[in-house]
Image (cartoon, rainbow, N blue to C red; front, side, top):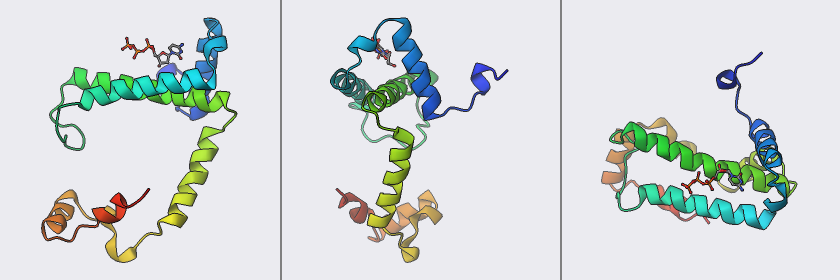
Length: 143
Ligand SMILES: Nc1ccn([C@H]2C[C@H](O)[C@@H](COP(=O)(O)OP(=O)(O)OP(=O)(O)O)O2)c(=O)n1
């Protein structure tokens, strides 16, 4: 038998666990799309609160304490778990929808082989920005 901690996490596993969680408590009746959307937005607010007033934080959060990281993981999970439930109650297969959207994004924003930031290190990217070679405007222009 696969132990809980060894299970690979899929959106479908999370969906099934949240269906069981709601059914065991008789909460399915309250989990309408609108209620789940509002609950998710509240959790996005709680997630935002963690970053509020901190200023910009470095990638990987190197200066954060363990308890801050744990709290962040909890709030990220709350958003994900409500999103999974919202998608389910709307009859949307979130995994399939997300894969399709990644394809659409790639068509809309074709890769530029001359300007592949993903192959640059953070330092090289920072140096390029300092030289005025900043392609963040391209990303910022997306809607
Ligand atoms: N009707 C509910 C209530 C809770 N949950 C689940 C989804 C979230 O993962 C978590 C949210 O629980 P809380 O509303 O207690 O929110 P927090 O865990 O953020 O607690 P708090 O707001 O006290 O920080 O529980 C759920 O699916 N359906």
